[in-house]
Length: 133
Image 1: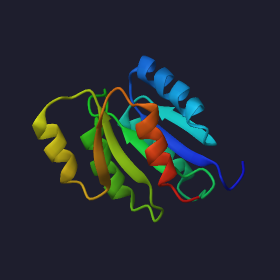
Image 2: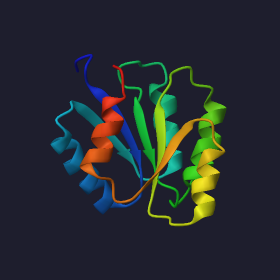
Image 3: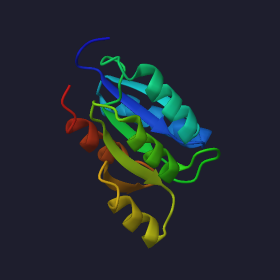
Image 4: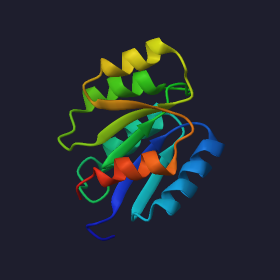
């Protein structure tokens, strides 16, 4: 892995959405190492496992809201308890059209924004462009 590769963690239980994001990543032209986890608990476990590895820690996280085991909101609460020292750009990525979900995302200091599904090539390229690796 080179220093210029961007680590992307997608937390989403929808396999079709994961497939679409993988295809979009390929079309951005960026070097991206994409990892996906199907619920918040698996993501927390993964982050605990790699927390000391700077090469693997995500630069960008896309987090779905509605998932089994640990949903997006519960993941964020668990993430805050991890006390990780590294910084990841975090965005909620959801098909939710509820204004209260958009407003709730704003209450988490770790969340940079709310993105409605489906993710576009343009939006992902914009997010990747902002990452400094």
